[in-house]
Amino acid sequence: MSLTSDPRLKLDEARLEHAVLALVAIEPLFGRVIAEHGNPPLRHVDNCLASLLHIVTEQLISLSAAAAIWARLEKRL
Image 1: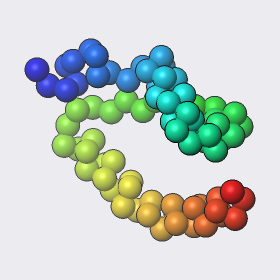
Image 2: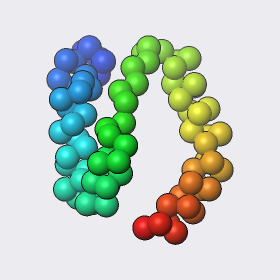
Image 3: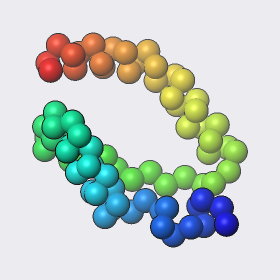
Image 4: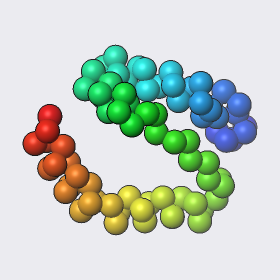
């Protein structure tokens, strides 16, 4: 059985909410972010190499943007 065919591993709104609450319990500062912006949106992609490469590319390109965002967040936190 592949991971994506196991219904226990599919992320839905209820599981996302549970995960967000668990994260906020570990780090309460995330509660402020969730209160202001809500939960992150669910993103469903096809289970294929093209989807994986697309995600990796997005992450690599985002590193410099993430550093700039993090610097701004650090000033506010």
